[in-house]
Length: 248
Image 1 (cartoon, rainbow, N blue to C red):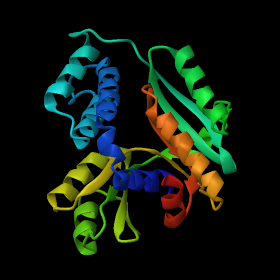
Image 2 (image 1 turned 180 degrees about the vertical axis):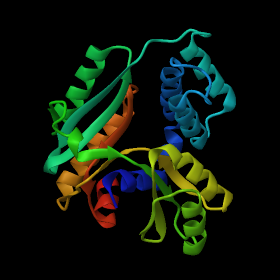
Image 3 (image 1 turned 60 degrees about the vertical axis):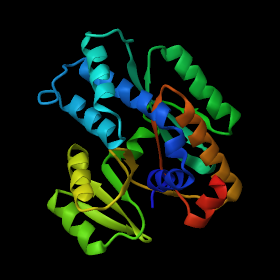
Image 4 (image 1 turned 30 degrees about the vertical axis):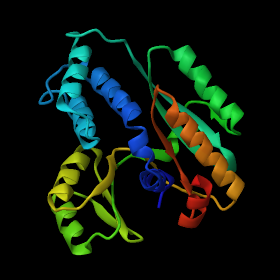
């Protein structure tokens, strides 16, 4: 399993997603606000439609979504945010891409650089890492799902592939249909851990050293805890056992 997918699963098992729900909603609202600057109608603004679908998948309320749209269209007070993708390396040669929305480029850049320098990573020049990634729709289910049920629901809704991950599944789609496929899986009675359109690496970097694994997860947690960071994408791969040890 890719680092991104496995990390999402580990966080779910640890309950970290619930603990960070307030921070998650703030980040989702910011994404909606930025998307809505190009128009507040989801029927004519596909970027906004995707942001709203992502917020609903994260169980954000309709009122909170509406307020974010109004801030973006200028009907309510809101900041001006800039989208930046930082690139870097974690221990073990693991590549990282950090998706940011910020109203202060200098502040955020300094904070990201400090996280890398304190935790054993390094910043990279633009393009040094990005060529290894492309955007894909990824849906992760809970354990114990009936294979025939998820195969039928996902493929009929437009999924490209359904991959067995132990007793759970990773469903791969085009980014534009990930939330439509998630809705079909929900309708089939299957619980989804996460649904998103991350940057997926073409090649994975195996991680077998425990100290490297711990350092990688520390960097991921610190980056994700930053209010301006929307998501972190990586190309590491490690066993379930090592991931559990490193995350404990």
